[in-house]
Amino acid sequence: MSSHFENLLEVEKLITSFETDRGMLRAVDQVSFSVPQGKTVGIVGESGCGKSVTAMSIVRLLPQPSGRILGGHVHFKGQDLVRASDRDLRRIRGGEIGVIFQEPMTALNPVHRVGRQLAEVFRIHRQASKREAWEAALEMMHRVRIPDPERRMMDYPHQLSGGMRQRIVIALALACKPALVIADEPTTALDVTVQAQILELIKSLQQEMGMSVILITHDLGVIAETCDEVVVMYAGRVVERAAAVELFEHPLHAYTQGLLRSIPTLEMPSKSVLATIPGMVAGLAEHTHGCRFCQRMGHRDSRTAERPRIEEVTPGHWVETCPKCYQVP
Image (cartoon, rainbow, N blue to C red; front, top):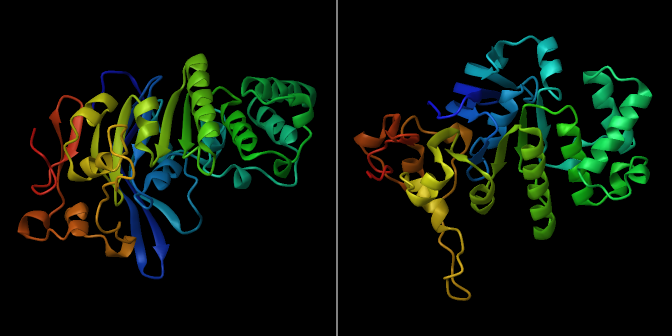
């Protein structure tokens, strides 16, 4: 999958599985996409589609010992992270790739002050002295717009609001000015006003630092506002990938079209019933080898039994070409 920009990250046919009582089950099934330098790539799909597992596979932060990468490549600045040593990964995580985790309360250590946790990043990755690390942490608190940062440095996570905790997690992810930031649903459980502030903060810091961003969300409104390219995932596979404008104007896969129909618009009459996609995402043990969206919709015949190929149908626009789900342009 080529891009018009120089790619910072190339994910190629990534396969991630989990060891269960029912055997090895694939959560990510040959996923491929790229992240251009300085751009934002959104990964969107319903819960259970493999978005977060894909992101955690990139930095090899899968649950152990059950989670395993069974195939594929993740090239970051020319280095394959799938085959990188643990020592290299410790240097890259937090240093060159930052992660904004989904739930800030579980991402922060409840028994340490937030200032100490932030300063530790500079101690590990920049070999700073205690004083230098503390001053750098304080400066980072200013940059993520924490009010009264000198006092907040001495607070524990439970003493902060959800929005402030999320800003601390962003500060941890961006402390060492990484080239890539993975934001895993960074506005989950926040109210609408705080969500907008957090997204604007990430966007402004991205422009300031020139970093690339992978934004994982189920909110297509957020995707439309913030992303340059979009990867649509369903049941562990990429079903469509394109520039954001192209995807919203010309969605070609039935699943993407269903997601877009579910977005409320200003033109809709009051109390309108929103469109929904029938059924649910199948569990990992129930995934079919053929088209998985057809499995959900009950379209079962010889044409949908084989896995659809993902093809570049127009320049930069990739789609799973299932005969039932692919809308020919």
